[in-house]
Length: 85
Image (cartoon, rainbow, N blue to C red):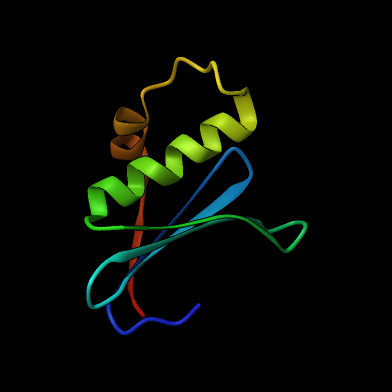
């Protein structure tokens, strides 16, 4: 995973979430660091929507599709490390 823009990282329920800024979009990765396995990738047009998509994936993977968590609220509560790519 390489990027020229900003890179945002966090962990939630054992899964690592990485969002990389690209020239025209944000690339989302969610992976299990213990298994070294990428579980989810997506492209979104804004950072907020990328965070929402990643958190929604983790919530669904960990709690099932009928979870009642609000991904937009969880995404704001998580501590995101910001790095240059």
